View 1 (tube, rainbow, N blue to C red):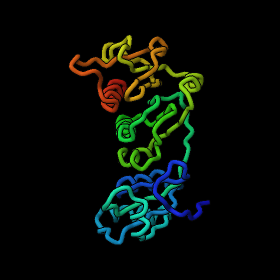
View 2: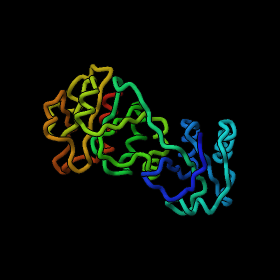
View 3: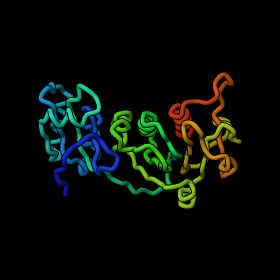
View 4: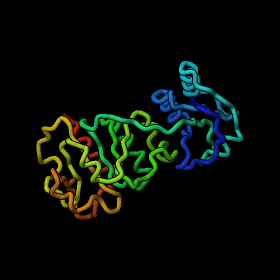
Length: 241
């Protein structure tokens, strides 16, 4: 049962979050309609084809729509926001014995959203997050993902140890000192975990010889690749066949 809540600026301790903008809100309604509390529109909203599509979808899904400029001005984190989706946070349980991307202590909201979108583009739908980590329901993450978050299954673990105890998949740890060069070995596994570390510190050294460690080779003119770029390269290699 969805109850009316007094909407305020986003707070990670609240049990609800927001989408800002037409596209992520459309993805929210399309993929997680059962979690939508309501959609709030600005009186300044121009009725474009995208808006008509959103309104039609809300009607079909029986989603409540309100016009309220004051609420939008209060909760939106940017100017010129004309559409806000309000939804209940949720958990997803899934079989982790499939293809998974694992992020260890991710700390950048923009990176997180970009990674979500990239995952979806390569057909990897399961994301495992090892805490501490950025709040994946923060509207900044949702906006960076362009709504891709609502098509993903997301599972959190409190530690790398608790994750390792549960996962039985073949594991590929991406590290600068990895023993295997990406693109130089055959990928035979149909189910696997691709594991990436924190943007600044990477993965713990003691994982170097745990299952398979992988390095993405690049010139010595840089010290490392950006995390979303590294993940995009890895996803391409593992899903191209």
